[in-house]
Image (cartoon, rainbow, N blue to C red; front, side):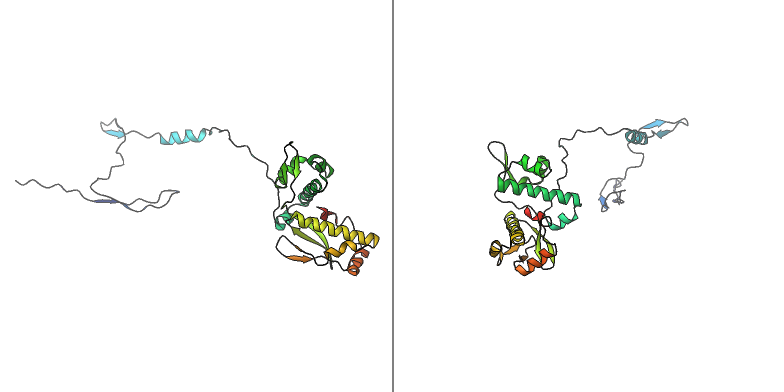
Length: 247
């Protein structure tokens, strides 16, 4: 008698999309029977003489794991306080008024340290700030000398929003250069000198000068004496209104 040939059927098992996961493509398993749902479970005798699968304790284990609180792991990094350092005029004007004023004072501190050689502590206290605040927010404008003291660098790229005269009144301009900010400070001082004494000699060097703003726009400073006199008579060009430009 010829022995009957045993054949194995090819069974295709399609995996369904698991909960919360990505769909998987059907997997073709060749020559392997599909295991029954009871496969791998320990069989225990039943009262009727048969066997029944042992119930899994997976639900109890899951409930137990939910009740257990995860152990806290000590963080190796310390949380740092967020530093508010506006880099654009848009960021500056979205800050609350109090933070804008604080930033203006910080730039004043740096300018005073640079022009007068004042220490960080003294300049900060003069403008009502903690030296640590200045160091954290304007650190790029400072450097530590050999004796351990902080001094201002020759120049910096801190954002400054300054006030200058315009034919329509005062105008705020944002600059990213301490050199340009110094020029604006000199210009406003020359305007104040002219309004107080009538001496316009210091305004001459600003007649053809154009300053570059943060957005790359070139602006021309008002040097027309009649125009400045008109603005001064209207009380627009007071020292207090131009104070911010001293940074």
